[in-house]
Length: 544
Ligand SMILES: Nc1nc2c(c(=O)[nH]1)N[C@H]1C(S)=C(S)[C@@H](COP(=O)(O)OP(=O)(O)OC[C@H]3O[C@@H](n4cnc5c(N)ncnc54)[C@H](O)[C@@H]3O)O[C@H]1N2
Ligand code: MOO
Image (tube, rainbow, N blue to C red; front, side, top):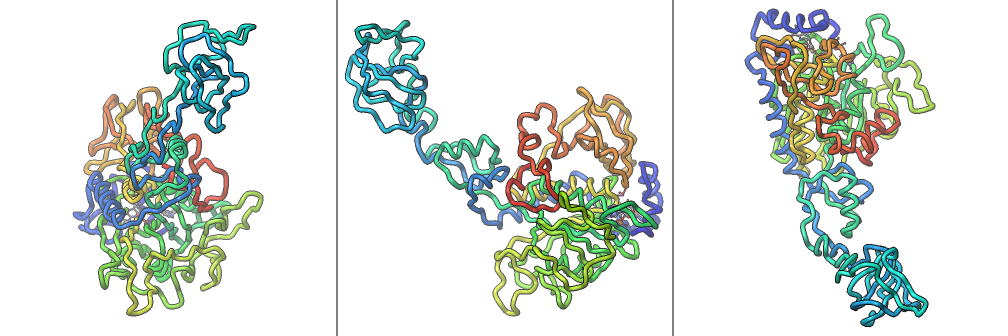
C-alpha cells in the first residue's frame, strides 16, 4: 500500500518508468507480466463472463414504478388493441352519413364514458377528444369546422371525408402484437407504452448486485489528510458510478489492510459482483491475490496492458452449482450477513463515517477506527434466498446460483476508474442484459503521449467536434476525470493532433448525437438524485 506509492507517482513518465523497473517477469500483484491481457481482450473477457453468468439468472417481475432503466427479459406484447375502441381524435361532432345533420342534443359523448347509443343516419352528436365514437358514425367534424343553424341542423364548413378524425380500434397495434423486443431498456417512453398496452408489471432481467470493499489502512472517511493518512476517494465515487452502470449496490465496506477480514468479506458476500479497491499489487499489505488464491477463485484477467490501472483483475468464483466449487468457509464467527471483524460497513440507508446523511454530519472517524469486531451495523443486507453462501448447512443441497465475480481495482483513483471502464462496465452491462457500450470516435486536438506497449486511457473533454486531452491524468489524480466527458483510448505509441481515437463515454455524458437517447442522464439517473452515497435504494438503480 503506502509502501508502494513512491513508485506509483503521477503522470505518464512514471507509468513509462514502471515498465523499465520490471526487472523480472513478475508484475504487480504477483501476476506474471506475460499474463497481462491486452486491453480490448480484457473488455471482451469481462463481457463474456457477464453473459455466461446472466444466462443462469432468473428474470423478475417488477411494478412499472420500479422498472425504469431495467432490461426487458421478454418481448413486450400488446395486451390490448390500441386504441382499444374507435376513438374521436377531436372535440366536435360525430356524424352519420352526409350532412347536414340533425343535432341530437341529448347524447353528447365524453372520454371515459360507455358507448353511446347507435347514431342514426343523418344525425350528429357532440363528442369529445378521446371519447368512443358511437356505432353508425362515419366521421368526426371538428367544432371549428361545424356550424349549427337555428333550425337545429349542423352544417360542415368544409368537405367531410369518411373516417376523418376517427382513430380506428387497433390503429397502433392489435392485441398480441410485439411492441418491443426482449433486451430493450425500459425508458420513460417504454413505461408509458407498457401502461397504455395494459401492463401493471414488467418482466425484467435482474439487476446485478454489487458490494464494494475498500481496502487500505491509510484511508480516512472524513476531514483533512494528515500524518500520512489520506481521504478515501473511491468509496464516494464507486457506489454511484456502479449504479450508473446498471448495478444495485448493496453496500460499501471499509476493510483496512486485514487479509482475514478481506477473505471473510469476499467469501461471505451475497453480491453477484464484489468490487475491491487497492491491494492488487505485490506490496506487503496487498492481499487481493493471496485471498483470491485461498478462496479458490479463477483469475480470468490478471493484469491488463493499460495505463493507468494495469494491476486490475477479474476473478470468477464457481460456478457454485458445480460440486466442490463454492468458496472456502469464512473466518470463524462471520456470516454472510455480518461484517467481518475489522470492517466498516456502509449499508443502504446507513451512511458511512465521512459520508454524512443530509443534515447529519458524520464525526471525523478515520478508517482504522472501525467498530468492534463482530458488531454488525444495523441494516446490513441479508443474503438473498437464491444465493448459496459458504455457510450452507454441511451436506445440504447447494442452491444453484450464477458464478460470482470479483473485480479488483487498483488503489490509485484514476487507475480504479480505468478498471471500472475496462472490466466492471462490460461485466455489469452483460450481467444486466445490455450490449457492451461501443466507444465513439473523435479527433483529438493535441498530441497525446503514448505508452510504448500498452493502451492508455486518458480523460478528455469535447470541444466542438474535437476531444481535448486533460492534463491532470496521473494515476492518482481525479482532477482530469472530474471535468471529463470521456476517456480516450490511446493506442501504444500515442496519438497525433487530428488523429481519430475511440472514446469511452462516461455514464453522465452522452456520446455526440446521443444526447436525446440517454434521457436518464438528465432526468432520472440515480447519480442525479440527492442523498447519501450508499443509499442503496432499489428504485431506478439500474438505469444506465
Ligand atoms: N513495485 C511495483 N509497485 C507498484 C507497481 C508496479 O508496477 N511495481 N504498480 C503501481 C501501480 S501502477 C498501481 S495502480 C498500484 C496498485 O496498487 P494497489 O492496487 O495495491 O493499490 P494500493 O497500493 O493499495 O494503493 C495505491 C495508491 O492508491 C492509494 N489509494 C488506495 N485506495 C485509495 C482510495 N480508496 N482512495 C484514494 N486513494 C487510494 C494508496 O494510498 C496508494 O497511494 O501499485 C503501484 N505499485
Ligand atoms: O498507473 Mo497504476 O497503472 O496507477 O494503475
